[in-house]
Image (cartoon, rainbow, N blue to C red; front, side):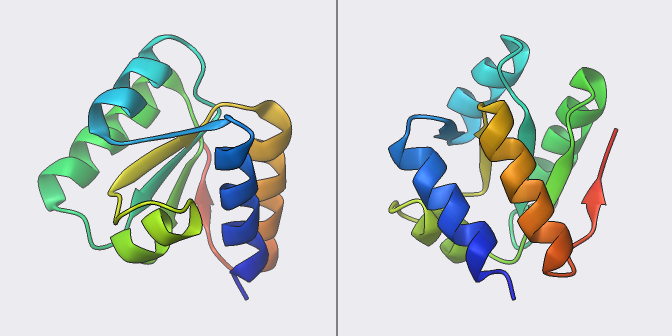
Length: 108
């Protein structure tokens, strides 16, 4: 069950500890703020590859969410391809909830 993970993402967004959208995510990760990168499973192959490379470059754990609609909906926004958690506590909570829900997390 991934409901707790998505609830934590919404809470992180409301707390200002989550950034979404391609450019904002790239800026946050490049600035050293990114703690957990989230990619929608139905985003384009190019977007997926670009952000996987970004996660690898900056050694950030990567979590693949089910769909853009699920990722965006969980944070109260329109469908989103990518997001990044910028708070350590929220990142650890989301990772734990994802692992408890059976989602594999790529730790780089």
